[in-house]
Image (cartoon, rainbow, N blue to C red):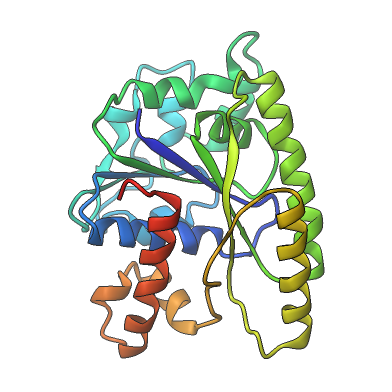
Length: 264
């Protein structure tokens, strides 16, 4: 099974989807066979990375996870415009409905996504899962399926609380979902401005807390740039953008990918 990174935070609006998108772009630049899974019911990653002709009623992740359908991940994978990068979109049957189906299973409900990924064998070298911004059956499935978890956060007073909650969730997954080896691969600070005193303060505080918890911090932090948002919304890779400012951001995500996926 491929090295699988679940990109997560139980708080929305921190740039989790944008980070997943640009890590996928870095993987494309390095020629990695990559599968991106949009497990966020909002479907923003599907809008950015999916092909333009992808119909809203096409089969998607929910159909592959549902215990009441015959679809596998192979049946719902679509090619993106980036060579070597495929997508499991959020389309078709709604994820909310499938979460209820999964939650109703008496056995193995935490392992549905992992079982589906195992069926792909060594088709991919890297899998990136954009997790929902909540703690539910889908998040637990993503954590159980992951080799490691990547935490995306802002440098603010809520980040420390979120990190503690997420660490607690992962502790439960390790204990109750037969994943004793699950770990946080790193924390990525997003939209960071060191000139804002409050951000600089919380950046130092969270770094110190992470060190105490023996959780790595991925450097450098991602700066606050409108270019990142624009490229994500338009589905444009940083290195293919006409905006010259985007080129300055390419090395950041390339370095992050090397940190999180050393085999690349």
